[in-house]
Length: 144
Length: 144
DNA sequence: TATATTTCGGATAAAATTGTCTTAAATAGG
DNA sequence: CCTATTTAAGACAATTTTATCCGAAATATA
Ligand code: FES
Ligand code: FES
Image 1 (tube, rainbow over the protein chains, first blue to last red):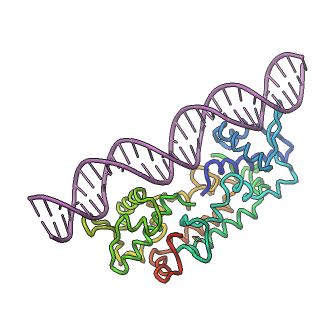
Image 2: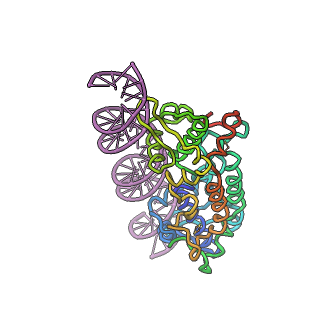
């Protein structure tokens, strides 16, 4: 569904958001430990998210990453996905024709469109904030 | 969503089925021309589909690929996808945790499950046959 | 039987993705 | 100002995916 980079990006975003909500800044090492991802690779992804203004970074001792608290319920899953994978997965043709095209649809278009639009709606309405809720109570997990 | 290999595999299957329904056997060259895919790579994928008994192949002059007519409405999209990509896409965790796990779900589990199950249902109920209908009438397309 | 056609199978190559390493830049704190 | 810590940036490496190539095997047909 998504690339590894994107999966790490989403997990990292959720973790950063959760920590930001209790006023904590987290660094690369903590993040990759919390979400069980390769440290250097994750660092690259964090750079991407930073460039896309989805998270903030600060250098130096006691530096690290945060998500602005007022943004946590504004940022949607789709923002993370677009920033890393682009929007092909929820806008492109399921059979790989360049651009999904209503006028010249692939044979699976009608079937795919339903699923893809559901995915799109889900990504565009799900906030990072709501994904943090189960975490601190131990109902949901960012690694296993 | 799917790999390139899988996209080609689905398009090829639909084309082969369509031709088989009018009694025509098609070879690698025709197929990759019809679906606009790299010939040698497509040949590999056709081998996979053959091994999985989704299509039949015959060697020699006038050889090529067919789909058994009585199977065309039995074979589902999920059969093609599983044969090439496996079932990760509609059974795995959306955030990349190994195995989706109801007991220890990722934060996005509930949201993802809905979409993924819809995808699963679509793939498991859509037959190759119904995907061929629009083709000959020029309503749907395997390339653009 | 000889030949041309076609799939099969394995090796190889190119490109994209995933992952690592090293150095530079920023910054907090002594 | 100096040092330790942390992110930024770019080069590099490994792996996976995508794609090509070639010789062998099968087969129709002349
Ligand atoms: S054209 Fe293929 S999904 Fe719309
Ligand atoms: S655990 Fe992530 S989708 Fe089920």
